[in-house]
Length: 304
Image 1 (cartoon, rainbow, N blue to C red):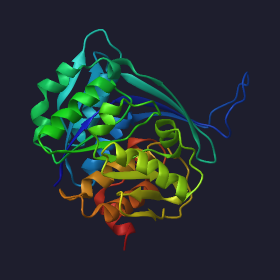
Image 2: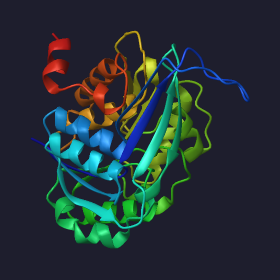
Image 3: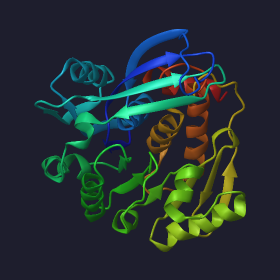
Image 4: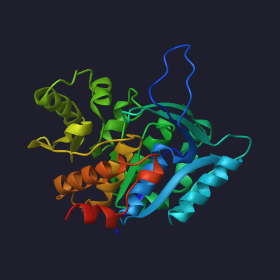
């Protein structure tokens, strides 16, 4: 099993299913309301674990009921939660997700404790990082903490995977400490200022990242699959054609599943992308973030 450490966010999601997205000032009725585990970091950890990786987590929750719910959910997944800090007088991160009948979503996030763990918390848990094959991080928690984790990983030759979402400008130092970057088209444009319109523009954006030392660039393209570049070769791994009902956590499912399959020398990254695409195609056919994430057995069955 690939040992993986995820540094990032933990949210309790409140999900609303609607026929269509309301216009400004409009009041509509929901078709369903439910809560579920979420947060990009937690989603990616669950995805990696369900695909067989030994998974550890560094992050924070508040001292509230939502925090205990999320901690219990991660423990049920048999994810190592020793690196999760409970912060006094802080709210656990929460997301409010609206999903329409086309499967598109609109998400509002209250970061809470996710924005309150520090570089010192990373340093206290550096053994989790140095004992891992790879470290995964996103942008729903402090960037300086992510940078600290990546710098520790680099010193120990641990692969670093950055999912720069939600889209933000990233410090160059962080990109230089990144081995694999996995943005979508919008995030790629924000990071590189290159408008993504075709494969040629994706190659140009990839070259920007390679110039900073990133080994592998993967630009996720939704229903069109994923573009990849190593600096020497490029290609597109097609998505699996399915009817999506909820795209929440599709990208997180991809990243966790992808990382779970990577060999230490990264030599099988194309096969790992295909596996991630398949996992994501299953997730979008279900509702919710973590409830939608498939297990390894389901992915292998779908691959027959």
